[in-house]
Image (tube, rainbow, N blue to C red; front, top):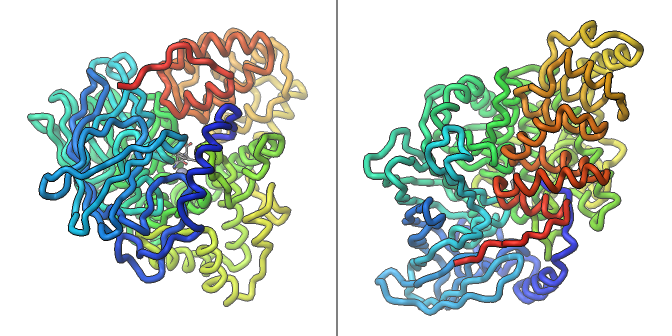
Length: 638
Ligand code: BES
Ligand code: ZN
C-alpha cells in the first residue's frame, strides 16, 4: 500500500504506454484460462505484463534453483509446460534477470530475445515450434532483484545465519523467476530448492516441517496460482504446530512466542470456513520473518509471510492473520484479473477479516478495527485529493503506465470493504453471506474483473432483491460516497472521554485505561491534542511507558506524537525502531511527519542514511521518493 506518487519516471512511463498500447485490445482474443478452464472466462488486457496469454500461455512451472546467500544470487532453471505453441512464440516477463539459455523438451535450443527495459522489466520472447510442449529457461538473478531481500546474520533475530525472503506482489516475481507475471494467468508449480545445509527453505506450497540433511527441499503447489503468489524464504528457521492444520515457522528464538501469539489460527480457519466454504489449500501456516519485511503480511498460499511487529505479546494484533487467511478465498481463490481490480482482492479481504474477527473476538473488537480503518481511509483520501492522481481514490483504478504499487492504497481496502458492508446492510447478512459463498464457489481458481463482479452481483443479489444502489459512484467516483455505513465503537467513545478528562486536569494514573487493548491505545494516541507541551508528554510517558513499549503499533503512534511535538527523549528509540523495522506502513507516516520541519528533515536524512540498507526494495522506493533521496552508489547488476 502506498500513497506516494512518482515524479521522476515520466520518461519510462511514456515508453511503457507506447509499448502496451501496441499489445492488444481491452479483452484478449479468446483462449480459455489455463488453456481450457471454465467456459467463458477470457483473458483481460493486463497493462503490467508483457505476456500475451491469448497466444501461448504457461500451465505448469517446474523450478530447479540453487540459493547462494554468499553471492546473493539465485540460479537455476524454470521449466514451463505451455499451451498454444502453434502461435509460434511465447512472451514472458523478466526484470534484472540474466537468461543463459532456453531449450525445449528435447533439450534443443530455442531462439530467444530480451526486449528493452521499462518499469515492467524486459519481455523475454521465445520462438516456438508447433511441437514445443515445454521450455526450460536457465537463468540467474541480478544484484538488484527487487523481490529479494538478502539479510546478513546481523539483520536476523538469532544473528547467526543469513536469511532470504521474496515478495512478489505486485510485479516483482519477474525479478527472480522469468514468468508470465500477470494475476490473470494461473499455473501449478513444483520446485527443487538447494540451500546451504545449515538453512531451511519454505515456499507458498506444501512445506517440509523438518530439516533435510543435504539442504535440498522439494515443494508442490497443486492449485493453479498467479505468479505474484510464488514465494520463498530461506533461513535458520524451525516449525512449531498450532493445531493439526496450522502452525508457525520462525527463527528459533521467535517460534515459541509466535506459536503463542497465533494460538487462535485453527479457530480462525474454522470460522472462515463456516462463513464462506471449505479451505482449499491443505495446510495454513504462517512464517514470521525478520523485521525488515516491508508489509504486515503477505498472503502467500499455504504460508502467510508476516512481520514480527504483530507479536505484541497479548494476541491483540492477530487480526492480521485473519486478513491474510481470508485472502485464501478473496485473492488467492478468486483473483483480481489486473491490478486495476485490486479492490476485489483487498476490499473483500478486509470485509472477510472483520467477519472472522467478529466471530472469534466479538463485535467490539471488530468495531474498533473498522473505526481505525475508517480513520486511515480518511487521511489517505485527503492526501490523494491533493496529489497528482486524485483518480486513485476510485475503486476501479487506471494504473496503466505506472508502477501498480503506487495505486495500492487504503482506498481498495477500506472503501472496498465499506461498499460490501453497504450491500450487506441492504440485503441483510444471511443473503449477503449466501451470495459471497456462492461467488467463491462459482469463480474458484479464476480471475475476476470489476465489471464481471458487478454483473454477477446484480444478477444474483441486487436485482432478485430489488435493491438499487449508486454503484457507478462507488466504483468510478472519487472520494467516499455519503451512504457509506459509519462504523461505531463504544469502546472508542470511552477512550475519547478519558482524553477529555486528561485535558481537563485528571492525572494520567486516574484514567480508566486498565482494560485497554492495542486498538484503544492507538485511538488514544491518534486523538490526543495535536500540540502538547513537553511536561504533558513526559507525564504521559511516565504513566504509560510508551517509549519503552514492546508493541510496534503503540510505539509508532507514540513516535508520531513525539515528532510532531519535538519530544527528543523518544528519538533514540525512534532511531532504533527505524533502523530495524522495514514495515512500510510504519515508515511512511514517521518519515512524513519528520520532514514537516527543517530540523526534522535533517533528522530524517540522518536516520534514513543508516537505516536504508536494512529496508526491502519496496520500502526503499517509497522512502527515497518521500525524502527525494539520491542514491550515490546504486549497486551494479551482474
Ligand atoms: N496483499 C497485501 C500486501 C500487499 C499489497 C503487497 C500490495 C504488495 C502490494 C496484504 O494482504 C495486506 O494487505 N497486508 C496488510 C495487512 C492488513 C491487515 C491490512 C499490511 O501489510 O499492512
Ligand atoms: Zn490484503
